[in-house]
Image (tube, rainbow, N blue to C red):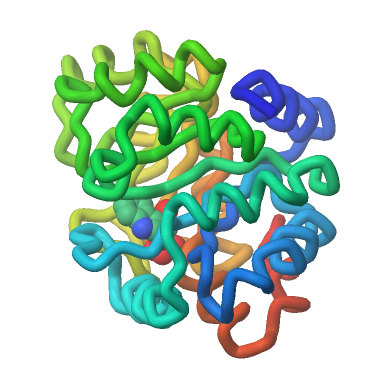
Length: 254
Ligand SMILES: O=P(O)(O)OC[C@@H](O)[C@@H](O)c1c[nH]c2ccccc12
């Protein structure tokens, strides 16, 4: 599918006067056999991009809801390779772009080049590796770039202006703007100057800036999305899917 497919999806929402909505799921939660139906449900619900998490034993940035989902998925004994092979088996039946979110360790285990190969065969558009800072991204990025797969970068609330400028300069796919200090999971509210922070980043970025961490309602998605390219929702979606309430996901999309 490549990063161009993701760019097209962003252009489409823009043409429609809407904002991007990225849904995070934990692959293997509920069993790997459920992956396809979950992706199709999200596609039907109208999400722009799916961020697919790979279960990992030491998920440092994950909040409690995502951690629990990761534990459930690990119990199913699914591996990075199995997940990407499963995705490859039905990639022609889905049209929503997929971004893989994994930590550095599982990638090292299979090798960065082989990982990129598996991603290509699975039709993946982008990759997020939150424990790899920009300074160390090259060995992951190079094999992905050869296959037109984007390596997504983060900016945080504590990033300096210089850091933000450097991060967005040649950013690929989208920029992940972290909206809170800490781990993933629902929050009651955000800093008062968050929207200003997001628009400042969005003004400089050649690719959409998506706000994520703590977004769990349509209202929050609307408010934050108004300041940038859209939002990423994780814990709320993982929770709804786990509770068998996947049909409510469409109500989160502005
Ligand atoms: O769950 P939240 O608060 O809606 O945030 C999205 C987040 O879960 C998802 O993007 C994600 C899951 N694990 C991560 C690790 C690092 C960065 C981001 C993530």
